[in-house]
Image (tube, rainbow, N blue to C red):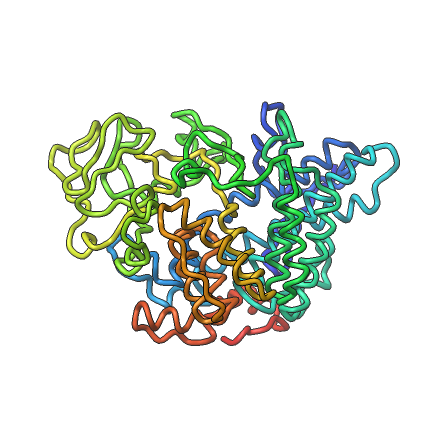
Length: 511
């Protein structure tokens, strides 16, 4: 049987997932990066392997999707409590940038292959319903990946077919046209996907209609098509499986026990991990998990399972903490700072952020986890539940209903309905135990109120920074909050230098 590996100048690697008989559709990982020429896409199982391959590639995006925007905003500091230098974040040779770029194009590559094979499918392999669902999933995943790529890089190569040599010299597509394609992909996904909770059994966790509608509405926001954006959100609000809602407490949303619940619009799936699974990390068995809880936990907290404890690499700046008003329940529930106590849901006892010291398998010398300027920083507990585990098997939410409601507030305000806009915004504030904002028809006052709410609600989540860049207020935000002059070109990350070296026709996107 002939096998071949496919590499494009875009850093694309097409991965086929080899699926074993396991209880969950996501208990599968890419193996060797090869595509089998004979036998590919001849059966229903072949198509599902390709689809799951695109889902699996989502896992590799999590770290960069959470932290790159946070570093750019300066709200997320490094483990020493300092901002990550801009010349590192916006460096065309940085692995931060190249990883972000490459990982999303892997999703695109997988989706392109599956869409191509679905277009050419032989009769009888899939039922009409199975074919619709297959199209819907990969159409969503391609639109989703391109939305992150164009938010991050602006003009980008837009590839809609499986790899061919012609892609080695492809040029960039203007951002507006990329958003048109995203809208097309997501609109088709809406038509083809079932509602989220129509997926049952081993298929729980696959993308549903609600996620496609949420990201489609956001795409219309980039086009400033407020009428279509509003109609799209309203279609989402009309869904009943699930009927999206805010939970009474924001802490419930971020729980190790909760997966795919009614405030979660789209989340990246991970399988639960056994205590010894991570020991194969770096060996022959790939790791199905992530390091986000360990990255956000204070250093050296340790536990009986993972003796090196938290890494404390992604922490909140002092300025980020000031984004929270007095009495904001999000600050109380989701952030720990010196000298506060914290008891995560996976912890038997509380820790106090002064000298979290000796734990089983740790040294007997206390270790102050807030030395020097870190006593002014905060640790997010959105993903850290009190112990550090590698790999963590909890899902990562990429969009929540509160994010949709704040988007809807912006949409309604731009349609001239300030009262309805503030009603959406104040729903989020009420859940945070804050008094409602006073209604204002002044665009500058509304924007100030909206962005303050987004910052407090979406800190260390994937979508916050892109609102600043979409609205062209990033430069002002950085200057007002950090007294740093942000170069306008930093609205986008540079196209990785490696890609431009391979393909001289790629755009420089301002660098």
